[in-house]
Length: 355
Image (cartoon, rainbow, N blue to C red; front, side):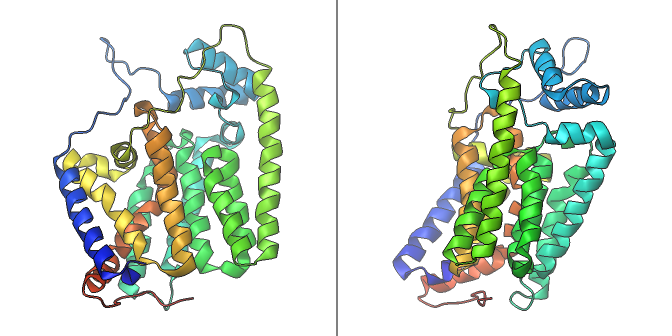
């Protein structure tokens, strides 16, 4: 994509990239809100703890929506609107197979994602690039080693996107695999919806009508599921239940970068360095050209925009929805920079061959 920029636009993009890099290395953004310890050294109640407790109640025989409402109320979590109560999928699964079972599913998705990205551009990218893609997925997927954090549904949902997006290139004729994998992510966390809608539009654009029907069927099933969830959640409402503070804080670009940092291994680095590194995959993804490049860029930048506009300081874990697939952009970064350099010279370099 970058290789086809006109020279003036390529020069402007290069200058903007330098300015953005300098901003990342010098800015001090507002902090995120994490769990605090009281005077006894005990951590405050967290979202992950809430979902673990709900799963325990369900395992003990209590209906999901009743258990969720009671625990939301007991720990001062909002219950209005209905989607402040997460869909029951992951908690009910955990109640039956345990969090180690959830971890095993996530590990399977991670292994599939590693393999998928290593073969997705077979014959079109160099073997170091394809190994780099797999390595990037490994690096960002290390969070699954902590089964406690997998209660944050963004992580398993992000793994579903990782495998489904790789499958877009790795096995396009077996599109039903992508529908099933992405469907699992969508039923776990509704913020996967933009990817499902994008996949539907892309299938229609390419006149893949059978695949288009598969995505439409998934969306219809999910819509019915969410309608049922809405009825069940609202049945638990009481007059004095808390109302959510909303999702309109518009943290902006730094909010997106912090979400990526604090849900990934980048959190171990100094913040200025982490901000810079968290920004770089956005450039790498621009190396993919053609229609498939538009699909990838729409997914990456679409989720980034969603987090920038709607996440709050205490919902930084939304960044998990972009992991580990967002880190694939690192493997594409050298090619993207070569393309940009060529475009500044009026030349097309390092283009990825069409499938």
